[in-house]
Image (cartoon, rainbow, N blue to C red; front, side, top):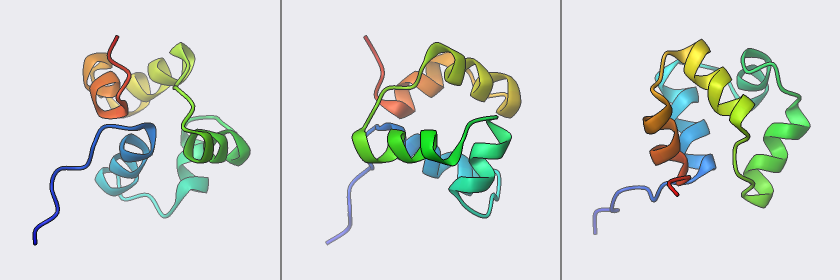
Length: 77
């Protein structure tokens, strides 16, 4: 059985960024996003939503559109 598409979530977005930008791990992603490793851990563990600042940082640093960030993270209101 082939797995279906990954449902949108903050975890899916962060894993996409690591894969797409060939980062080593979540710690490297945290450094590039100017966040602490514990903040990234909370996003992953608790399923927290990204803050506006975090969305903006991803947009500016990785050149990803805000709408795509929101869709990939499941933060469509």
